[in-house]
Image 1 (tube, one colour):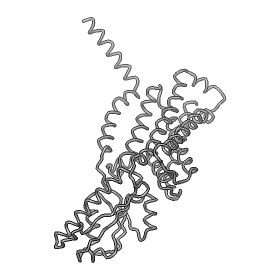
Image 2 (cartoon, rainbow, N blue to C red):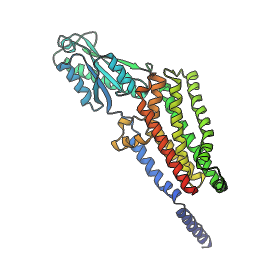
Image 3 (cartoon, helix red, strand yellow):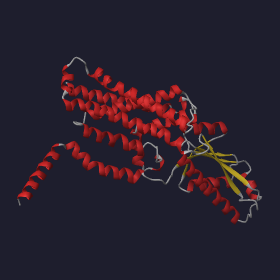
Image 4 (tube, rainbow, N blue to C red):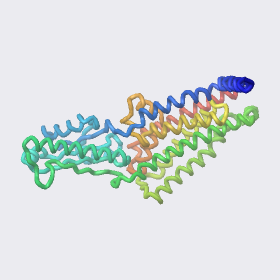
Amino acid sequence: MTGLRKLGAVTVKEFRQIGRDQRTLMILLFVPAFVLLLYGYALNFDIRNIRLALQDNDRSTASRALVAAFTESGYFDIVGEAANNREISQILDRGSARAVLVIPANFERDVATDRTTSVQVIINGDNANTASTVMGYSQALVAAQSARLELEGRVGSPSGPLVSLEPRVWYNPELRSALFLVPGLIAYIAMLTAVVSTAISIVREKEVGTMEQIRMSPIGTLPFVLGKTVPYFVISLISSMSIVFMAMLMFDLPMRGSWLMLLLAVSLFLVGALAFGLLISTVADNQQVAFQMALLTSYLPTLMLSGFIFPIQSMPAFLQVVTYAVPARYFLIALRGIVLKGVGVAAFWQDIAALALFATVILGLASLRLRRQWA
């Protein structure tokens, strides 16, 4: 019985201690449910609601039937039309559509006279996994439409199906996974290291007791914040650019855009990440809690909700709304536009503006909370 009493006393004491540390308790209770929700909804390899643009050069009953086959499949959504090849380039450069369906002129006449014809699908290849899936969906839908036309009384050509598909992949014709993964890894590594480093750095000052000395010194909040973040910004920037150079040497990662724009995008992303680490440091009381909060708020969203691995369009509507608060979403669009597409800032200026806004807001909140704590 003595052993049971000792066990009970330690157990009660530990429950009381956990109850006093409400932040840790919330993490222990909230994280499992959050991870289940995130993985259950976002971990979805079925790609739906693919943005599809259309260039219908025939505008006939047969071409409309083919377009209907794409939209009624549940995989594609028509988001616009292209009048010429120049507009197709603009649509894919901006990322307004994932693919463009091009139907040739005289399409209906050819299928009516049992003359073989082909349609083209031009696919944005910056995401190799999604591009492969889009190609597979398109080939299956065109093959099914060709078979339906043949069953309606047309025998087709002995050399092949009546309607065939000619896929064309832009930006990554070989669909190499490295060209898709490297930009995402840059975002993942940069976000995680930047957030964790700044969060733990300032919380460490609280734990060792030097924060009180800093508060009493004439340094001021802004010089303290900048002095704490500049070293980690430089280290994170060197790390991020090193990944780019290594990918170019090892995986033949192209650099089709401007180095200056790349440096700007990476810098804005890092400033936002470092500011987020500062904000966490104003909430956490010890390094363990700071580390857990940094992982929860930077690791999972960057990996799951940025479009790095799982397409945002396939997520439930409420999660798609949440992704607008994930800076890696905008960073990946800008990064792939610069590195893989070689487009100008006009194609992704909204994403650059979103990164700048995120960095400004989070840095302002972190500075405000620090100033209140020092008051």
